[in-house]
Length: 152
Image (cartoon, rainbow, N blue to C red; front, side, top):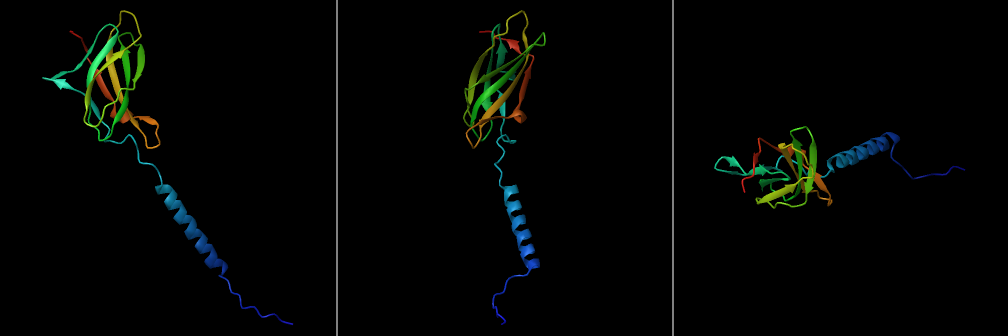
């Protein structure tokens, strides 16, 4: 006795093509499903000037400067890297932030003692990432040299 079957399926070639198309579509979605970069070219700070003089100075245990946020996002803090005349480097993080378009004066105390002065200051902003962490925006680095002594 012969059984008559009316069930039909798709051919193996068509099934393979559908699987490849489905895998390619998932791959395209996965490749485009990435978070936006936090530290893009819009993150920018600067040390302000007053009559062509930069508002940055040093004394025996601290450095003072007025920074301005030129970015379209809030800056949650700064990393200040100080280079001393003898080659010593000190890194200081501050959690004092700057809102969009804001400016503020920063007083950065350092612990290095000796008869060596600050020769260079690198200032790098931190911004908040979408997932809550902070990111250091190296591309927004500001370097200040020839820092004068504070007069007040």
